[in-house]
Amino acid sequence: MSAKERDFASLLDLGSKLGAHSRSERLGLALHSALALVNCEGAAIRSARRQGFERLALGPESPTPRELDAGGDAMARAVAGARGPLRIADLAAEPRFLADACPGVDAGPALFVPLGGRSPSLGYLALYRERGRPPFNVGEARLVTLLSAWTGLALEQLRLTQQVEKLAVTDDLTQVYNYRFLKTALRREVRRAARFSFPLAVVMLDVDNLKGYNDQHGHLRGSFLLKRIAQLLYENLRSFDLIAKYGGDEFTVILPQTTREGAIAVAERLRTAVESTKFPLAPRGAITVSGGVSTFPEDAGDSLGLIRSADRALYRAKRAGRNRTELTIEEDAA
Image 1: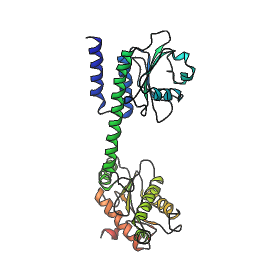
Image 2: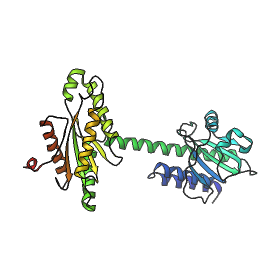
Image 3: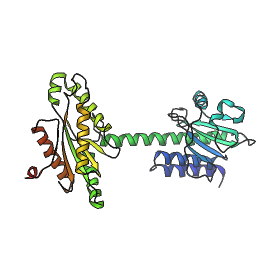
Image 4: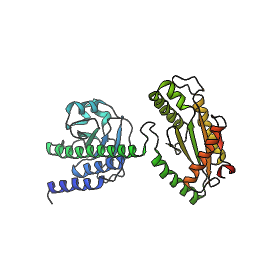
C-alpha cells in the first residue's frame, strides 16, 4: 500500500468510527489519527473556548488522551491571524509560543492547524516533533488540514445533534424538562426503585395566583416570572433530581432515593425559596407555590399513580390556603 493509499484509508477509518462517539472520544480518535498520519512525537487539541490543551496524546502508542494544564494564548492569536496551517521550524526558538509546547516532547518543529478549516473558532490541532527533526512540510500540512476540517465538522455535527435532542425534551419557556420527558424518566426511576428497593418521591408544585399576576401585568411578564421560578427551583435541587414542566403553571420534581420525610424537606425548601424571593412588580412573599408529595411504594406502585397521588395532595394544599405542602392521605385515594 502506498503512502497516499494508507493516508486515505486512515481518514476513511476515522470517519467510520466517530459517528457514535462523545466529544472527548472524537477528540481522542482525531489525535490518534493525526499521530498515525504524520510522523511526529506528540499531538494535542487546544480549545478556543477555554485555556489549555483540551485533550492530549503522546506518541503513536500513547494511552487514552488526557487533559493538561492551561497554556498561553499567543499561539491562539497567531493561528487566528494566519487563518490556515502555521508551520514553525523550531518552537524552542519562539519564546512567546513555548507555553504551547507539548509536555514530554523536547520543543522542535511544530504544526498548528485550525479546526473546521480556516476558522480558528473551534480551536486548533497541534503536532510536535522532537528538536533536531525536519520541519513539517507542505504536504503534511495539507493532510492535517483535511483531518482538522473533518474534526471541526464532527464537533459541529455533535453540537447540533445534542441541541436537537435537548429541544425534544425541554420546555421552550422554562428550559426545564417537558412533560414528554417526565413520563419516560419517571417510569425509569420507578423501575429502578422497585428493582433495588430504593425509596422514590414525587413533588407536584403549582404557582399560586399566577392568573392574577398575568391579569395585572400581562402574560409576557407572567412568562418571565414562570421562567425565573423554574430557575429558582432548579437551583435548590440536587444534581441527580429532575424537574419538569407539567402544565401551564405546574412543575413536577422527581426525587430518587428520597423518603417521605426527605421529600417533605425538599418541598418545603422549594416553597420557602420562592416565598422569600423578590420577583419583578410584586412584593416579597406575594408570589408563592403550593406542593403535594407522594412516595413509592407507599402511595402508588407505578408512575401514573405517583403523579395522581401527588396531584391530589397538591389540590388539598390549594384548598387549605395555598403556600403550603401537603402529603397524600388515604382518603385522597377513596
